[in-house]
Amino acid sequence: LASRELKKQDTIVPVGRVRIGGNRVVVIAGPCAVESREQIMEAAQAVREGGAVLLRGGAFKPRTSPYSFQGLGEEGLKLLKEAGEKYDLPIVTEIVGTDYADLMNDYVDVFQIGARNMQNFELLKRVGSLGKPVILKRGLSATIEEWLMAAEYLMAHGSDNVILCERGIRTFETYTRNTLDLSAIPVVKKLSHLPVLVDPSHGTGLREKVHPMALAAVAAGADGLMVEVHPHPEQALSDGPQSLLPDQFEKLMRDLQALSPVI
Ligand code: PEP
Ligand code: MN
Image 1: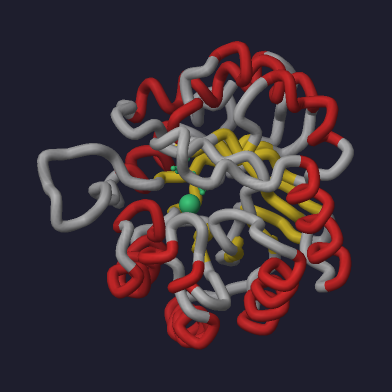
Image 2: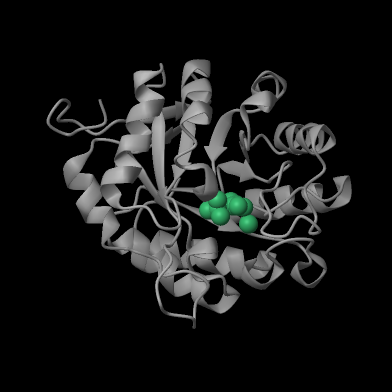
């Protein structure tokens, strides 16, 4: 179902007034995690002013350490929705387990399947059956074939609106947190009709590398970007070192506009 052989024209995923895919670049931005009302409101205002069209923020965080901040849970969903409504931005948030599906369905505009859950097939089946748009991140060690098969799971269980997201893979290189595989963009674009986003924040793990890799992703044909932005990254409870400051985000958006039409 995800194959270009079956469907020649590009899939365009509608999310409210936003269209993901087609000839305009979409930018999804927001903090790694929802931390407080003040933080998510400030972040939402900043990304809206910069030109993002969807707001991201995790309420259930899949952290490497069980002792790290795990997210605000349902309270985080409420705050994210409140911020999205205030700034007229549909919301994107990660689902980490099938148990959360009913709860989250009441809040979320776009589900995110995180890299660590890319091959959680029971989760893919459940989220696919909800019928809402889904952003499917590439697994840390997943081949493109495996990634597309995970998309196939979502589609086989009822989701027509799958959006792929390259977020870096695990290699021997340590200067960046992950190695952002930009060559995946033209490869996937040829194999599949689904839209492809790039997440240069997790892809590099370093704030100063986000700008160049975001521009490179769009130059390579990405349909959009997912970027972490935090009003005070030094105080962030997760992924502070890779989060852009609001003025850095604004500068990125200006440079992107010069490269390609951004909605
Ligand atoms: C995130 O988007 O905050 C996240 C945890 O992403 P990934 O699953 O790509 O690591
Ligand atoms: Mn993050």
